[in-house]
Structure formats: C-alpha cells, structure tokens
Length: 448
Image 1 (spheres, rainbow, N blue to C red):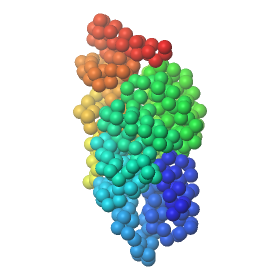
Image 2: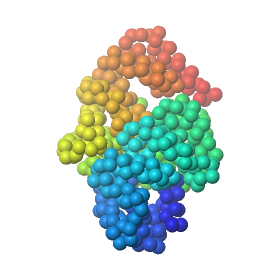
Image 3: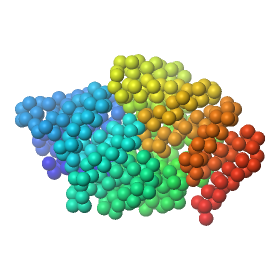
C-alpha cells in the first residue's frame, strides 16, 4: 500500500512520479485490484484513444483479481466506475463514485475523479458540492485535508464565490504549500477579480512548487500569459509560449488547449503568431477522431481552422456528428448540441465569415459552460462572439454583449477596451472615451 498511497498523493499534487509509484505498487502485488483500477483511471485522464487498449487491460486485470481474491463493495464500485467511464457512460461513472463517497467519504481518489468529471461537464455546482458533501468527515488531523480544501476552493471560485474561494484556498496553501491545485484556485480568483499584480506575485513565489509538476506546469504558465495579455506585453507572452508553454511539444489535450487558446487570443489582439499553428494542427489532425472529450475536440478544431486545414476540419465535424449519433450519454449530447456548432463557428471565424459565427454562437452562449473547463478557459469563446459581432458590424449585438460583460467583470481591462471600440463604432464618442478611460485607469493601477 505504501507505493499506492504515494501514487495517489503524487496524482493529487500533479507530480511526474505518479505513474512510476503506481507501477511499483502493481509490481509488488500483481493481483492488486485497486492498483489496476487506478492505472485505468490514470490512462483515462489522458483522454486519448491511444490509451484505450491499456485501459481495457487494466479493467480485465482488476476483474480477474476480484474473481480470484474477492473484493470489497468499494473496490467493486471503483471497477464499475472505470468500466462505465471507459465505455463513455460518464453519468454511470459519476453515480458509482458518488455511491462510494456516501460510504467512504475519505476516499480521496473517488473524490478527485468525481470532481474532475463534473469539471469537464461544466457542472460548477457539483464541482463545489461534491467536495462540500464530504467535508463533515475531514479535519485538520486527516491526511490529505489540504488537498480537499484546495478542491473546494476551486469549486467556490467556479461558482462565483471569490471571497470564500480565496479564504479556503489560502487555508489549503497554508496547510500544504505544495498543493498546486489550491494555488491554481487562488490564481483563478485573482484573475477574475482583476488582481493582476497579486496573481503575478503568487506565480513567482510559488514557481518552485508548480514548475516541478507534470504538464500542469504549462497550464500555470498559461495563466501567467493571460495576466501579461491585459498588460499588452505581447513579446513576453510569445516568449513564454515558445520557451515554456510549448517547450515540450506534446499532444496532450490540456497542452493543446493552452497553446491554441493563447494563439487565438494573440491573433484577436492583432499579433502575428507566425507559423506556430502548424505543429498544433499536425497534432490536432492526428487526434481529430478521438471524440473522448468535447473540450479537447473544440481546441483541436481551433488549430485546424486557424491553420487553414479546411478539408480536415470538415471531416472532423462529420466525425463528431457521427460519434454523437452513436451515443445517448452526456458526452454525446454535449458534442451534438454544443461541440459541433462551436466547432463550426471556429471554422467560420477562421474563414472570416463573421456573420455566420454570430448566428452559430449567439443561441448557445449560455450553454457553452457545459463544454467543460474553467470560466477562464470558456471566456475565449464568448470573446470570439463579441469579436465576430464587431467584425460583421452587428454593433447592437456587440454593445449588448459588452454591456453585459462589463457589468459582470468591471475589473477586466479587455472588457473596457473592447467596449470602447464598440461604442466608437456606434458613434457614441462620449461613451467610448469613458470606456477607454476605465481601461486606462485599470492599467495604470497595475503599473503604479
């Protein structure tokens, strides 16, 4: 169990050694059912069809162990959850993990996994409440308590409780300064509240922790790049992209999402990104038929569309529709109702058919959250809608959207800059000057 516990702790801390610890656990006991089950879970986290065979083998090995040695109800539920997840039954997996947590609220593996899947369903309430439901069983004396508070902090942030999220996140960091997810939760709060300087300071002071992580370190660099974007430090953003975010050119969906969303933002700001789309499009093309995670599909499409791979993008759209038609689970529904129109809108944007972008995105904009990911990640698609409305001279729609955005996030420099452009296009000179001054004052406040 020592190696297994080390594997779970490493997983919670985004450490590179999680897989190695797990392999040692299985080597020490080849019939260890939970070891095989955890291996299957770890492979599913890649959201990569290339890992399907390994996941199936892990399920078979776990079932063999149960048949030969027996198993507890908890272990059987874990194997059932993995099996459901593997066949695309997300709700079945969630139900099994929730069942485990009713009996075993200290099962932090089940808690982290149920939290993960709710996150990629865009279910912010359950990202928060899946943790809240087990808080009664945890206290300062319970190993892993800090990790649980870090998860809870992120759920609070995604539900808009920034004050609560900040307080709980800071408590989690105090308990465990190496809790990258807690640091990440607090960073989200600072970004949503426009606390750029504090966010930058947090990244710097915690860099010795998160820079040692697995590829989640690239996501932390991505957050740093977003802070620099508002300051218009585009050269620093591109430098960070080349030397940090894409220093290792993997095809992991989170790495692709970091890269594509950042390049898309840079181009929207009028920055030439050179030939950087090419290698992302190569990897996206190779993964364009995976359809394991709608969030990943959308970012693969972004790379294909931006790189002008029209035929591949069209084939991917057809493949997404066919994949969704085969299933009746949550992922299939999200793909059909949100993923497909969003991907079509991204293609239209790259083709400069901005009116079509508005037609596709405006009706689903309140449903985009179900694609999964954080509000910070989803925001790009809302920005794309605003940009398309501006470029297609649908200024009334653009004004309504920006009025909504500035009311919701008055500390966003991008919001006020863009609102100024919209109002200027409508001939509202006084309003445009006022919005520009808001952006200027926010920027000055960051540089004093």
